[in-house]
Image (cartoon, rainbow, N blue to C red; front, side, top):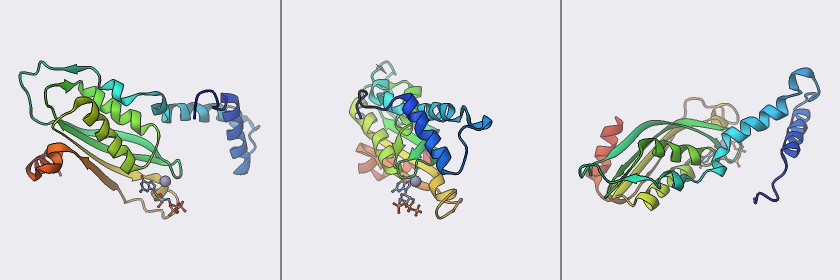
Length: 192
Ligand SMILES: Nc1nc2c(ncn2[C@@H]2O[C@H](COP(=O)(O)OP(=O)(O)OP(=O)(O)O)[C@@H](O)[C@H]2O)c(=O)[nH]1
Ligand SMILES: [Zn+2]
């Protein structure tokens, strides 16, 4: 949706009032007067990824690493996303590694890429591939490995109500895909 035909903030807050009425609430009662404003504020936060360009975070790279060419791995990056089917939270952990070719990127930027794609409506499969794809395109490393392990609240708090299920997805490219030893090393480094 282009910026021009996006509804206004006032329209969005009105839509929240409609939902509050739909669930049987009175949007005018004291405790709910500011709720539409807060609700949209929370959505601005949860979906701020639409206004971010993940690849831009990776544009600043460093070459002076004394020839370091082994795995760079960020473990346990918290993932906070929302499923595109129910707009329910997806909460979990990402492990992201890459094998640099001639340059490395600031470590925090990898977590920023995870965040920028997470703060959108997602399926876990798409999210996993988008993170790997961005690293692959911009850094052109010898390989990228992404694993996400997450709980979907549309499974735990509604519908089937199974709170002990976690979903694991992975996207491996380059050497991580082609060489089983690299795949093994990645798993050993993330401790699983
Ligand atoms: N593949 C995939 N499915 C997801 C993800 N998040 C939620 N889902 C699933 O999306 C499916 C949507 O199924 P539908 O039958 O259209 O929706 P529903 O009637 O609400 O399904 P139930 O959750 O089974 O009650 C459900 O099975 C969800 O578990 C995800 O990241 N990836
Ligand atoms: Zn869902």
